[in-house]
Amino acid sequence: MFKRVVRQSKFRHVFGQAAKNDQCYDDIRVSRVTWDSALCTVNPTFVAIIVDASGGGAFLVLPLNKTGRIDKSYPTVCGHTGPVLDIEWCPHNDQVIASGSEDCTVMVWQIPENGLVTPMAEPVVVLEGHSKRVGIITWHPTARNVLLSAGCDNQIIIWNVGTGQAMISLEDMHPDVIYSAAWNRNGSLICTSCKDKAIRVIDPRKEEIVAEKERAHEGARPMRAIFLSDGNVLTTGFSRLSERQLALWNVQNMEEPMNVTEMDPSNGVFLPFYDPDTSVVYLCGKGDSSIRYFEITEESPYIHYLSTYSSKEPQRGMGYMPKRGLDVNKCEIARFFKLHERKCEPVVMTVPRKSDLFQDDLYPDTAGPDPALEAEEWFDGQDGEPIYISLKNGYVPGKNRELKVVKKNILDSKGTKNAENSSPAVKVAPIPSIVSILFNTGSSRAKLDEILKEIKSLRDLVSSQEKRIVKLEEQISKIAI
Image: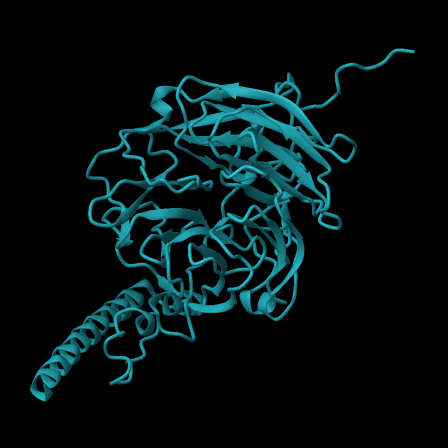
């Protein structure tokens, strides 16, 4: 009887191709921070890259079509007082990005529709709650304005960005530094990896550990853990002999892994990127010059090696384009943004096909930008599956909503620390809410500009009065002494 030697897969012949020089982003001072994050995040509109900055932390936000040499004076997002460690675009708004920093804060920014013209130092909201640097941030996949952050204080905080409040704080679950945190498909669970070598699956709203595996990888180097769409957990780590490993775990029984694949004895941490539509996982090792990819299936041995994209230059970090940002006419199934020391190079993964027709086996309906739930619904216990869109005619971006921060004034949490005990904060409605109300009621543009101007002058007045109050209080304290 004929025995098939080579496993059949439509992704067996996927090949990677680097963009030409004129399609790269050149002369970028990519951050030298030692934290093992991707340093880059991408959506169908912008690419954001953490860069070296004197006197604080900054990241660059470039429209995708802004290729070529990037001028040294190009404006950055520069509100952090310490190096930026992690950034991520909101999956429900292509103009909203969150950043975590060594200054112990998380900041959320709204980028103008056509990119930055001047440096941006004022975030929409500052989220303060960590006592040590914040190295991990990740948005909820299906609920609007829900953001997870994890810090070197071994704490995970889940925020309602719409109110600027910390809603859930997981303090006692991790005895050491958290290496990674990831949501499952509908955002009901998170999985984490920790310096104590344990993998934990956590129900954040019940604040309990659902499953745990101690010593998931024996090596001392950092691990990563992500959820697959079927609920299993995929981890990358190191063996006792410092060989890199890829392992698959069933959350219902984590005694033994479903599969462990040994790689090579390199010391670069693997960054896993998973495509739930095709069940392909891409491993990008920091310091490697290659991207390996595997197909995950339901039949043993579950993890099937596909191929490797190799290049000459090592990668400092990597950005991964959401599926809706790919070119379906070219059978593109993944696009990476590879960070070199001084540039960012797009790398396209393509399935070779002769037909020019839409390949629906490569592009099942994929998660779109619309959230299934509001933040309050998720915190109240509801779950929602991703809202899917078809890519048959390509993805057409819709109009992004303004990020609203209501109930709790942004000014309360920022400039009033010195005065908060002695004088009541002046409440000013955030501009985004008013903008959105005006647009909804169809008021004229002239009226809108007039009101925005007045709000700005009032805000300036409030700010100057607060400074004056602080100065007067200092004078009182000196007199009292």
